Amino acid sequence: MCTVPQLGTSARVNLRRLAPGASIRDMARGKENANGEGSTTRRRKDGRYEARAVLDTPTGRRRVSFYGATAREASDQKIAALADQNRGVIFLDPKGLKVAEYLESWLSDTARYQVGEGTFERYERTCRNHLLPFFARLKLRNLSAAHVRAFKARKIEEGLNPNTVGVMRGVLSVALNQAVDDGLLPSNPAARVKKAALRGESPMRALSNEEASRLISTAEGTRDEALITLALRTGMRQGELAALRWEDLDLSEKGSVTVRRSADTRTRTRVSTTKTGEERRVGIGSRTVAALKAHKKRQLEERMAASSWADPGFVFPNTRGKVRRRDSVMRSLRKMLAEADLPAEIRFHDLRHTAATLAIKQGIPIPTVPKMLGHSDPAMTLRRYAHVLDDMREDAARTMDDLF
Image (cartoon, rainbow, N blue to C red; front, top):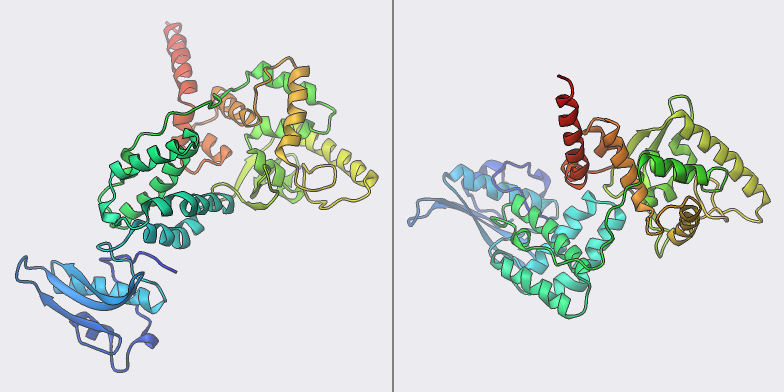
């Protein structure tokens, strides 16, 4: 496992791993010991202090220098790296660190613990199939925006959709943001590269209040009534709805749903954590509670009539009690859209946009909407629904103008 040590900060050292007779004070003063901790000396050229230690790096065991304005500052950096080394961590030296080495370290030590399982798999796949082969031996400190633009051009020339290439650039940018935070780069070169022009991107489409009511009325009495109702009133993602379990629901007067997990409903049916890796609780009203209670009764009758039922815990499974695939849901949605005389191009994800748009228009506080949707960054909510806020500002201006 690799990680970037927090240089410049003090760290605890595993005393049981130190060489016999060595102490933290010895290390700070530069006393040599069997673990390879070297001395701290002052450089003649720039007056800085240099502390040396022999550490395990991705390219093998070698001597590494740490610099500071004072001997204590340089020694503290060295001690922090040695403490990490005693925990089995490989040191990443920014001088010789290659992009490929950094990405592998970022995947194993950072990304794995910051995002959901599905997102991590996408990160890992993007790195393994595209980023690592292209950037292979390029040193991280030499990586520039020109390199990222060359990568983007190469992938488009290979016939990949610009949308897909944009996702790859986004993964690289997320990784390099961490490199900036860790002091390995002064800035993120991928952030200075424009996204590839998108092809065939479906625009966001939110239903009006009247259209949403019409869709719910059309779904009434069907197998998907509660699914459509919950999607429109909570903004839950399709994968979150597919992985929802009865134990996640509170169907009392103060009804709520706790979103704990998500399912891959495209080609596989694996259930993992939510997109952000965090849980959230969303309140639901009495009409939504009533729809879910009716759905539970209907599902019980369906289970009793079925020859087999895989998992009784799912709220919205397929007819065999397994995670329901998205193509099945879309067939049902298209049928309801046609019956409700609504545009056929409406996607299931547009129900989420509808919930967010109507929530903002109904005056739900802006800080509450990202929590309802499960956005890790509230600023993303503001950017995505800025047009709704702009329309509301114009309405507010007209309202104020009519007051006097």
